[in-house]
Image 1 (cartoon, rainbow, N blue to C red):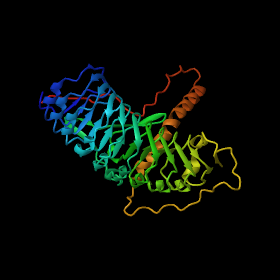
Image 2 (image 1 turned 30 degrees about the vertical axis):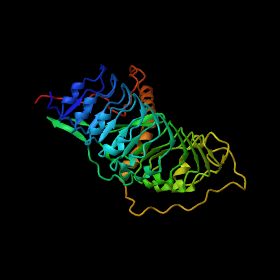
Image 3 (image 1 turned 120 degrees about the vertical axis):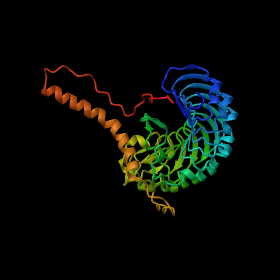
Image 4 (image 1 turned 135 degrees about the vertical axis):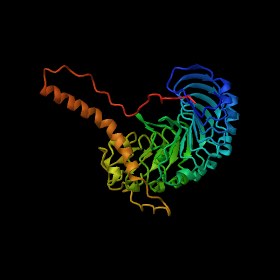
Length: 385
């Protein structure tokens, strides 16, 4: 079937190696083998798929270095290799050759070495997830040159392939958060996301990252990053989630964080921050656990009172950068509502269930309600030509 344009075999129990004959499907635009038990290495024949735009090999048991033949996939826009056992350095050709990439996820593998300085050449990149690897070194300052993250995504372009008789294959992205995850499909093109968490990165927070004013989610947690959190962090006015926990940050918490009005998830815990916790604005809505882990902070919501010499964290809020876009407020708000829904809906359903049983004591007890926030059923596929 060499004329196929997309193949979706995801969410099955497939085992063994991927046949090299997949490389004969030269018209393929999307190949999804995610969520299986496949193993071995990526076939060199994948380099023949010159029209391929989306490649999902996530959540399998693939291993070894990345096949160098992938550098031939100049049309590739999505590369998801998360949750496998790939190893070795992240090759520089990812940034030099795959210049059409919009989504790059290498999360939860065994990649080592530094973050390639060639990645900023990916001018369309909106999602960079390198979390949970063995990466070392400093965060390249030129990551602040990622053009795709330095502008707000205000136009939603639903990404799908192979529409035929009402059936089609749609793009997806799973964003990992502490204690859960979010799955994006129809709003995927609006997401700008960077995750470098759970590595061995060190050095200061690169202030150039605050040029990426389109970022919605930023996770640098569980590294060895030190120094202050720059005041210019508030230039990231679209942030819905910021996690810098379990690092070595020091100094005062910028009072200007209060100006991030869409911030619905924040974690500054287990660092060396000191002084008074800023009050007012959005930062005043977070619990004590956000600031926990070190004895150098004081003031609400912690139970530690500040003495007269404690820093009041005053400072000017940086001016907005010229040309900073006005975001789709409904989309950013939906991130916060998503967090709230995941917490409140199950409790609400339990409460309603109890009220019903109080009113109708003779009615048999219903099965426990199950709340599903994502649909992981395989996409239907019609290959008739």
